[in-house]
Image (tube, rainbow, N blue to C red; front, side, top):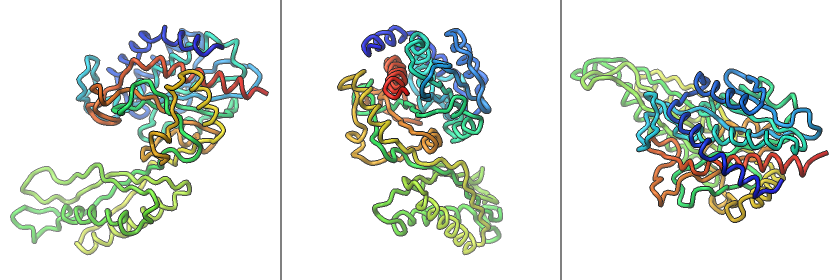
Length: 405
């Protein structure tokens, strides 16, 4: 179909998409707990004429062009929020204490519903099959593998996959689509948890206690040396402690101290990550023993690097230029050709089928959108929702048209 007609049809959906997005924003849910979001998504899809199916613990899949001959492309939007107390100055703030759509997944869900409506309106023109995925638990890196294990990539078999992620706080206009080149575009990520066990006591008699806070502080500082002294300067490896907790009152030495954080690399074989984990364990336990503490180190929720398929990325750039003209940019122009340090669990899909992951700017830092992803004050410009819907539909329609058998 004509790309400008598609954009016009998408524009007509804008207010409906804004209403859906703001409803979702006020009712954020985390992980697999999609008791509000999932029924809303299924209801909207059913109203469009789809027969949505459950997939995994809380995912939803719908098919456009079912039984059409040809290949299948998967398009995905994630639905989960973050365990953050919202501080953004918006009239549609979260109504749930301690939960917030701070990563823009409410935007993704609304954009995907817009794409679903566009694809249903042009279902007869689809030269193959479009599988629409609504995914939970992206923030904990569990939603994508759960849906894959539940058959996401089969029945019908998926030949290519794409996703879009909004980004806020960018020094560029809203509504720009950024398309990566082939190769690794985002880092892997693995969570860690370190527990330092000492012996509690009164603050007035530290000699009768074994202070886990002092030991944990030394461990935290020593771990920073892995980056500066043990990694090749050309390698990307980031160790970050994001949560440090110990004690409850000022005059008591606690029994234990704990640290949580992440390890990120852009090494597809994760050799750098393996080295960091080995040295983290050795350093933590060594310092703990020297300071009379017992130390436990746990690693969990690994997410691999995002791998972008060269041919699919080239196709995506062509299709986005057809739709947006100069509004479509090569991501390497913005990133300097370097992989981003952020992580995304759609990376699991990228290791199974050819994948492209695009970005949509949704908040110009020069126009009051000052904060980026995961900040409690982040705001997203939801005037771009229809552009995201059009981009999803354009990618699906054009790729199937170009790669029909």
